[in-house]
Image (cartoon, rainbow, N blue to C red; front, side, top):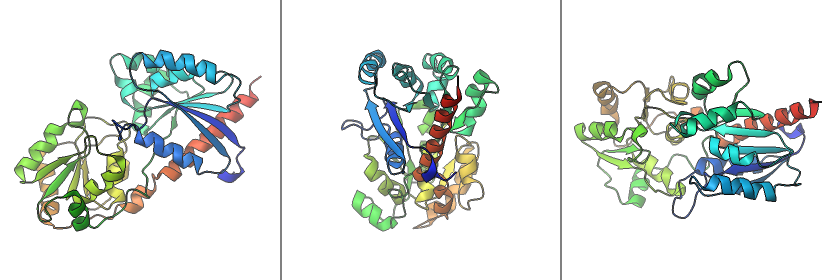
Length: 324
């Protein structure tokens, strides 16, 4: 059945992950998916956003219980495990929860998220690696959807490196490597990226508090993007680099083994400093290194991933209608 022939659905998205003035990067991938869903035919999307923080989830549940009563939603879709518990306050519709990784692995949040896996109508994860990990051990044979948020190809595209550096005030001739995360997050392993930059030599740029609209400039300004993480739920940074045709080196986490397989100039391998330095050498010496990555990134575009989500909604609505 084509996407335009699916029955119309009215969806409530519940999330604490959403960009704000103080944290413009926070949850931008959720916002991108919402915008892509709204662009599809046959779907109406409302969003309930609340701030992060331990006390917010209970307050959000109370508010959702009041505001969602009698609204006639066909699906309630929460992002992140604790948000999923808040979303249960909205009754009368099947519940979908997308788990993003840390919610399943966190010392305190993990047990609550894994308990939620058992009771929602459709549990989903942002990558197959999550499905094969803690989620699968919790649910056994029960279906778990894989529903990534995807990469925004309108925003992430090739920009001439000289132009990107000019707009950012960077040296046109210098070697720059990009660490696409906040160094304060231990799992991202900034120490590894820093060690590589120190040996090239090159300057390591980091994405901390950068507005999403500016991130493509930083990606295109770099000779290579370094995803040195111990683990990733999905790993959007690798796809964003590919969408800009920028070389990317990644540990085998999240989507990277699939996304980078066979892309000349990219590396997906466990972190070994000498091996990564050898892979970086050519990119560091090239004034404008590029890879043919955009076609691969397009397989994981926000539009394609939103269509997967829309189809999942139709399935969960249909399953609910068939129940006695």
